[in-house]
Amino acid sequence: MLVINGLEELKTYHEKELGVTEWEVITQEMINKFAEATGDHQWIHVDVERAKKESPFRTTIAHGFLTLSLLPKLLNEVLDVQGVKFGLNYGTDKVRFMSPVITGSKIRAKIVFSAYKEVDGGLQATFTATFEREGQEKPVCVAESLMRFFA
Image (tube, rainbow, N blue to C red; front, side):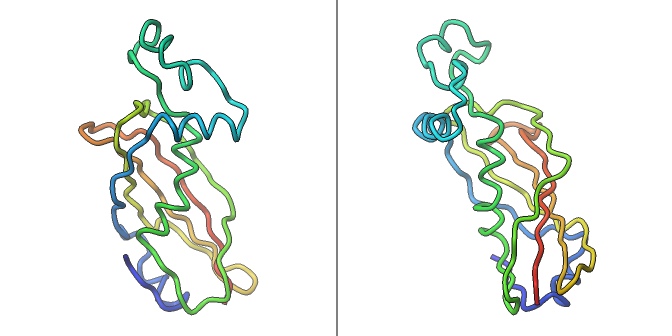
């Protein structure tokens, strides 16, 4: 994990890769819990038997937003910004789901500090996360995460 002390030090990492997270196994249990939490019970995610017969993947796949929802956890694996009062999730930009996450597969994210701008009392940072599935070259998701850090 990269530990950064303050906003001035954070700026020095602009346009640099901050790290790659550990692999995370996407289980059917995770998918089912996400479906319960969001109300998205589309069969391709939760109906294992139907997916075996009708899905082009022959199994269930994770919701795209399940993958995206892992971003705060994965970002915290590679980056710890200290010397600030607090940091807040400010949103996401340019989210694309380019490939399915097959149930049982492993994913991880490569995090790049891609942009920043000064805001009242702090800094808005943009981190580009490229989610990869083990054994596959094509990313499953690319998203820009916006964080605001206040000094």
